Image 1: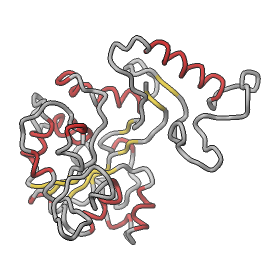
Image 2: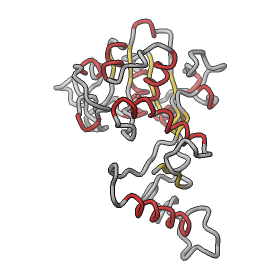
Image 3: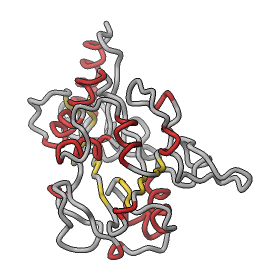
Image 4: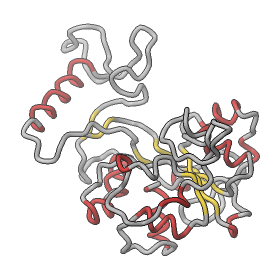
Length: 265
């Protein structure tokens, strides 16, 4: 959601001075499915915009109710990456925004082939070839998608930061044999359970600063800079969505990579 908005602002498709993201997207698309758009807990800031059209393409698994905007897979058939792909496959949308992580698994589950799609790159050009494996420079966003959050000005912030640094030192992938107390890596599966404490795709921690040397983390901070300046809500989590507009009928798939390389805190 935020990846699309920021890219569209940079390209001049959306007003870069508009801080109401729901209004900006809702007025641009004739119809969409952005699960949770009507849920205040998933809002990206204060908005008086009627977000009904951001849910107009969503479908409920309950045959008695065609309309939903539920923020979960049990209440919204078009929730998440698999739901987004289903929406596109069912011709209910002309363009979707998805993560590229494990996208081939979602396609396989829906009996779809990656070659059926072609990405629209962030510079408004088509990817060189059909498929879902695209260059990082083509992606709408190449960022981390996980973070550890605290309240602003929380008195425990420094203590939490120290705790996480210590956990990584002794139990992270970089822990040397001389410092590791037990043979346990906090970013790995435990007893067959994945993503127990942190996502298995995470490899470490990094401070949320533009000075970081990790490019995905730096991209993440810059991605939310406009939202942060507008609303002070830069740590909100983007809402995945689907969109439909008549002149997008020739488009197929826009990919947004939210690849977790490490946890941001």
